[in-house]
Image 1 (cartoon, helix red, strand yellow):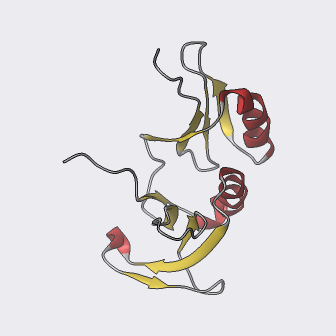
Image 2: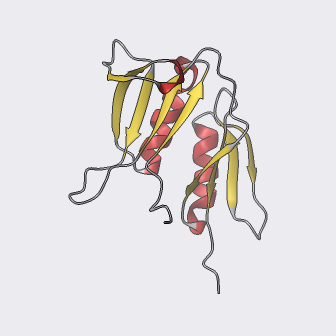
Length: 141
């Protein structure tokens, strides 16, 4: 049976303080308006609700829509974590790529580069080096 889509993404970073403002801005732009605080044990074995005063993880959530599951991405501090060598890509409209490129530069993205004409995208790193992307997939003819 095929998957019905993504539920969530968890990213580990060595310092939440180094990236939290970056992800606050990115999540808002991505349309994930709700920020939740959590306390996550190493490896994700346990999760508990946190507060703005006590947390080591943040989750950026989609809107609550009746009949739909909320999806989210989380950023978890794990001091031994290294920047992800994989890449998380978010889908955007192709005519918005220039605005996205300017936006990620403004919020502190590093190593920003454009895809080629066959693959319209903007690639960038967060402040600790995790590779991210916004891409505009074209519909097959």
